Amino acid sequence: MTTLMDVKTLKTLTAAQRDQLRKDLEAAEKEAHAGEVEKARAEIDAVLEKYHVALDETHPSSKKAPKKGAGKTQKSIYFNPDDAGQKPTSGGRRRPAWLDEQIKKGNADKCLLKDPATGKPFKHTPGVLKAIQENAPKAKPKAK
Image (spheres, rainbow, N blue to C red):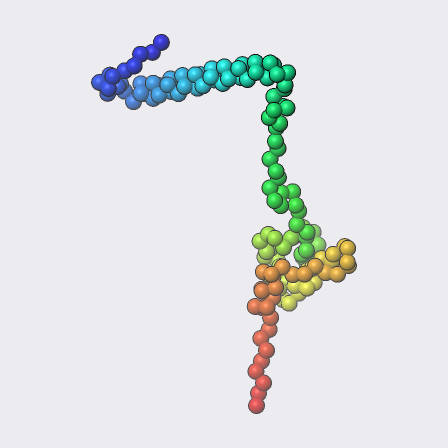
């Protein structure tokens, strides 16, 4: 069993000895806590046995609710008409460079996939709509 050290003894220890002492204290604390947990389990089991009840009946395990949106996949709405081998992209992620090029060319509507349920093209995402509007040709003022 270890004994308590006074401050003078602690000051004479090297850094490595202090680190070792700290590790020993942490290990002793974990061991003491484990003993307390085992003692509590034994007492709980005795009480449950006295009443002929299982722990699951008194404290049913609860599952965490899944996060909102977990497991949802976004619909793919854009494809590259110039390169059919590229994977279609959804509107929720960062816009690919090829879509920006198609917007500048004025071909953004050709990049839309059709909704299988309705047969109509999906709607552009807000970011793409804004980019289309920014890249739209400006109306020339009428000459007088």
